[in-house]
Length: 94
Image (cartoon, rainbow, N blue to C red; front, side):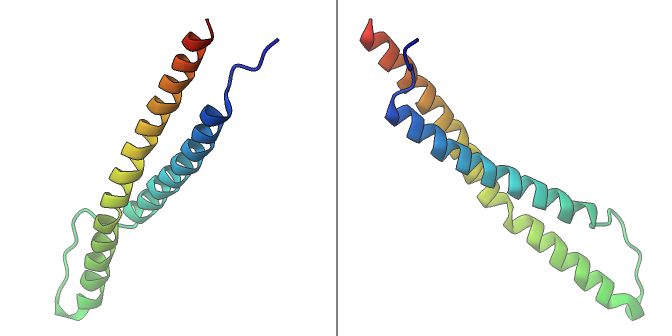
C-alpha cells in the first residue's frame, strides 16, 4: 500500500496540530477563568476588593478573545490548506 501523505501535507498537519492544541488550551483557560466570574454581585464600600478582583478577572477574560480568534481562524485555514493540498497531490498522481 502506498503512502498517500506527502511531506508538505505532513508538515502542515503537524503545524495544524500545534495551533489547534494552543487553541484548545486557550479555550480551556478561558473556561476556567469564566467559572470564577460572578454574574451579579452586590457590594458595599467595605467589599471593594471583591469588585476589583471581578474587574481584573473580566479584563483577563477579554484579553483572551483576540488570541482565541486568531488561533481558531488559523487552525481552520491550516486544516483546509492541508486538505486541499492532499486532494491536489492525489489528483496530480492520477
